[in-house]
Length: 121
Length: 360
Ligand code: SF4
Image (cartoon, rainbow over the protein chains, first blue to last red):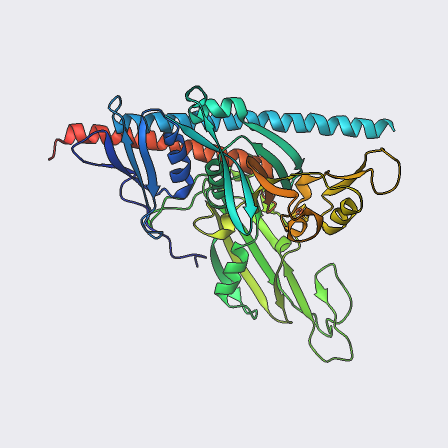
């Protein structure tokens, strides 16, 4: 007997770019993504200088889809800006990981110091 | 292009205000450039079960992405399929299976593969852990079961009540049965239940439970039993300041007013007389619960200003006991990174599909 029989079906497509005539304004559809990536990616894209407009939505909570609307200036097509944004997210994750590792070793050191002190007293 | 940054959130007359600072063009940076300068993580407390840390400089969308991943997308192991061979206990098979599923299993998910979806997926030693539970309450001839013996989980009952004795079945009665190479592969971290004293069922004399639970790797968005954390939450650091100083008797009032002991008295020393030379200061802003008692009435009404720092998160993670909280956090960052890299791949694949297919 399985403990949970019902699972949401995975999305058919992981990524889709809705075709419009202008390559500088696009709506991208991400399968199996939600606010987790949507909001943080939106934030990153908003910080890029080519971005004119960026917004995200999850059209329906039981549909495994997330949309990102991205409009860019004439210097770069929207798809390229999206890719840059994703690369930037990867960099941010690496930075988080690095900072976290350092924080953990700092904490461990500090703990070791304080137990040393306790040992002396 | 003029840009603005939210500096603080402020509660005023039950409405939220954001205070902005506009940035000059030179100050506008991409998010990663901003984080390189500003991101700080400071661990306040960390042990095997709980971790509290300050995440400084990041945007709320990142704090929230991490929180959401911690709750729903960091993989862990839990019993997924239960084969019931015998169950004469009062619990229905479904209820028993559900209870077994919720028991935290101490096994490193990194040692296992995920199960492919669909009926074709087959259990093997790389994706499944097997636990056996065989518990029966058998009384020997002449035994009443009323003698006190806690070692085998038999509870005696009061002789004056005529209820039959019960035997408790605990999580520790689940025994791992190694499959294939698992015994050598997992030798350094033998799979077991994280908390041995979880009560699964109670048996009366003659009742028996014999089941086999198959553990799988899964994520919290599939079922809450897979969530590696009890809670993961954050709040913003409160910032409390004085528009003008609160002195003397009023300072004492303010200190008394605050239930969390945020304020202290500083002796200004001038005059020396009790009262005049005393001033209220903010000593422990972290303890503030934002109850707003200090601005509701009394001396603080128009002199204390309650705010929150917009980019200082006090994050807390409570593990269920299977993975240490710092490990869960590192896994969460990795999951977020993998999301981005797999999307980049999907974008590339899509681009190739469009070019190669040539369909209109
Ligand atoms: S909001 Fe409440 S806890 Fe915070 S300083 Fe005021 S009285 Fe104290």
